[in-house]
Length: 316
Length: 95
Image (cartoon, rainbow over all chains, first blue to last red; front, side, top):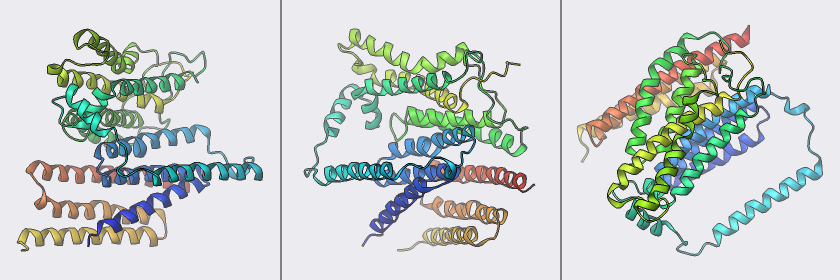
C-alpha cells in the first residue's frame, strides 16, 4: 500500500483550504499572502500530475511575479478598509452564489461525463511537433514553439499590451519619464546584500532554465520570469533605477520576442512552405534563436508591469 | 539490504524533519513575531540542510548533489535576508 494517495488527498485539501482562506480574508495583504501560498501549492499539484513544465511556470508566475504585482498594487490602493466599503446587497450576494454554483456544477458535470479514455489532441500534437520541432528532447517546448507557435507568439503580444495598458494610466506630463522607484526608503544593507548575492546566481539559473528547456522541463517563459524577478530584486534594493518608459532600448527589448517570432514565421512561408513552419534540418537552432528573444521580452515586460506607470517626478 | 549510506540518509533526513517539526511548533506556540521568526529560521537553515545532506548520497550524479547544496545555500540566503527585512518592519511598526 502506497503512501502517495494519502499525500495527494492532503495536498488537495490544503489547496482548497488556502483557496477558501484567500477568498474570505478581510485584509488585503493576508489575501495576497494566501494567493502566493496557493500558487506554490498548485505548483506541487502540477508536479504530482507529472507536469513539471507547468509546475515551474506556476511557481514562477503564480507564486512569484503575481504576488509582487498584487502587493505593489495593494500598496498603491492605500489599504482600503473593507468593512467600511459599501457591502453588496442580499440579492446581489444570492445572485453571485447561484452563478458561482452554476459554473462549478457545470465544470464538475463536464469532468464527470468525460468518455473513457478522454479525447485528447496530445498524440496528434506530439506527432506534429516531432515533425517540425525535431531535435528537441522536450515535447512541451516542441508543441509550444512548433505545433501552436502562433498562440505562443500572441501570448507575448498580450504581455506587451498589458505593459502599454499600465503605461497609459500615467498622466500626459509624465509620459516618457521613468516609473517611481519601487522603494522610497533609504537603501537597506540586508536588501542590498541579498540583491548582490542572489542576482548573479539567479541570472545564471534563469539562462540555464531557458537553455535546458529544449531537452528537459524548463523553457523561455520560466527562464524569462526568473530573469525578470532578478531585475525586480535589484530595483527593490535600489541598485538599479526603473528605466524611462521612452527609452529606445527598453522598447526594443519589449517587442524583440514577438517581432523575431513573426519575422521567422513569415520567412517560413518562403523557406518551408507554410506560415510558421521551420525547415526540418534547422528547426532546433531556429527555435532556440526565437526563444532567446522571447526570454528578453519577458524579462523586460514583467518588471515594467510591477514598476507601474511613469511618474511625474522629473528625471534627475 | 540496508547499507551504511542508507542509514546515514535516514538519520540525516530524520534529524532534518525533527527541526522542521520543532520550527513549526515554535511558529504556532511562540508569543511574538520575533521569536516566531527565530523558530522559522532554525527549520529553514538546519532542517533543510539535514534533509539535503541526507539526500546527497541518493543523488543520481555529482551534478544533482551539487544542485541540492546550491538549493540549500539559496534558501539560507533568502531566509536570512527576509528575516532581517521582516524584523525591521516589525521594529518600525512598534515605534
